[in-house]
Length: 101
Image (cartoon, rainbow, N blue to C red; front, side, top):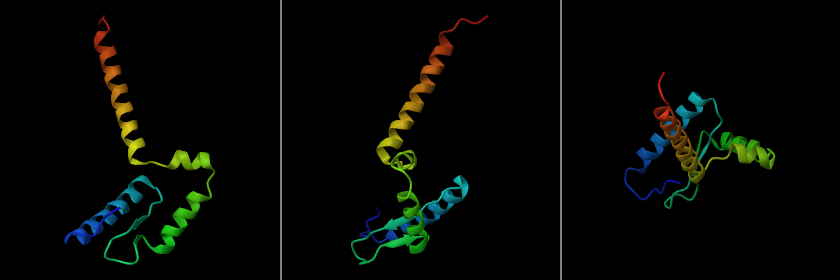
């Protein structure tokens, strides 16, 4: 969530929306942003209110198992990154310890 209490928040918000669009295109995924700020009674929504509503409804219509598979929060992302890093380091160490022929 972006808090709009800084003078450059509009620029940051625009940059975030641009990045979301790039990720949407590059990864061929559906995405939306809902940004609440303390100085605006209504949230800013990207790509549109209808577009965000469609993404949210599609997600909610999935089974709980499918939702869990699609859901990524900060904690699970960091855990998966550490796991991948540890796997690579373990794999590299195993290769270094093997005798060469």
